[in-house]
Amino acid sequence: MTTTIIIIFCVLLLIAYLFDLTSSKTLIPSVIMLLLTGWIVRQVTNFLDLKLPNFDAVLPIFGTIGLILIVLEGSLELKLNRSKVGLITKSSLGALFPLVILAFVLAYLFQFFGDNSLKDSLANAIPFCVISSAIAIPSVRDLTSGDRDFVIYESSFSEILGVLFFNFIALNAVIDAASFTSFGMQIVIITAVSFVATILLSFMLSKIDHHIKFVPIILLVILIYEVSKVYHLPALVFILMFGLFLGNVEGIKRFKWFQRFKLDEFKKEVHRFSELVTEAAFLIKALFFLLFGYLIETSQLFNFVTWMWTVLIVGLIFLFRFVQIKLSSLPVKPLFFVAPRGLITILLFLSIVPAERVAIVNKPLIIQVILLTTIIMMVGLMLTHKERKKMEEEALMLGEEDDEQLDEAKEE
Image (cartoon, rainbow, N blue to C red; front, side):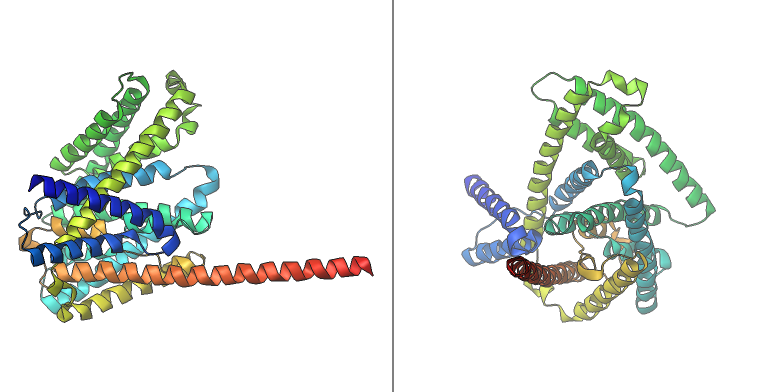
């Protein structure tokens, strides 16, 4: 049985790699293929009556590690400089306001139709309001650099702000002035801890000569994240600060203390570390979505009771998306379509205490919202891609005609 499981996982991960390789050509998000593959494996194992272990307890573990690695990977890609101040402002505000407003609108609906408290309704609403960088970023590789950068910043900020907002609502029994003060203190503490930990980890990265140096640093990052969670600190702030520091090492030249780092060598080590994080994130993300697809019951996909709520929630998501893009003076196409829900939505849903769960919000609803938003993104990007190709061909033809006319004029 052990050999069978190892073979199955190796084959599935190689298939996941093929999905990742071809997604930029097919414009089909790899997450859809991973979920579908996991679901097919479930049907095959049921048909052959194969007994596999229960993976329910493993899913949150892969999800948490995946979250850490994905946010770290995203923050390593974020470049902070004066030329990107406008983009960072637009993307951060674009992530914050739709998140908060949509959360309160959905919370009101959950409260009105389910007779729940506002606090519980908010905790159940927030997972639907967070854009998934794990799905959004790989799906926009074919876009222009400006649109791609916006999606990277926006989805990264959306995940971090969404988790902070969720933790604030979920961990405070009563929302009052004291809870806001306590949350402010938590931000200050985690910022201080993050600063010290970032300097120490960066120093280790530059000084360790042992042939194994990146794995201990990743393990320490995960350890600091989990210990911070034990003390109810917003641990993603640490991941963000650490990734931003490493991703922007050029900016530390002017600080005397950091001149101890041999910058050229340090940049090479950061590049190697970034590559390892990217590959580890791919591995964990693929395992997470394969397992999640495997755990999907067919009845959950075709639960028509929840489809009405799914259509309503997705409709509100894209309504707020349209307003946000218009107010930000950004091109509607293709950015309007890029609002997928994914790993963070699942993780936050699994984090809700059973006593605080809203009856309306269940696993079928989560699955349907993720699939529908991802399919809308896929179709939208496909149509936009075709339009852009057509425009490029027309521009090329016009250019050739202009050249021919110019040649004829010269001959005359």
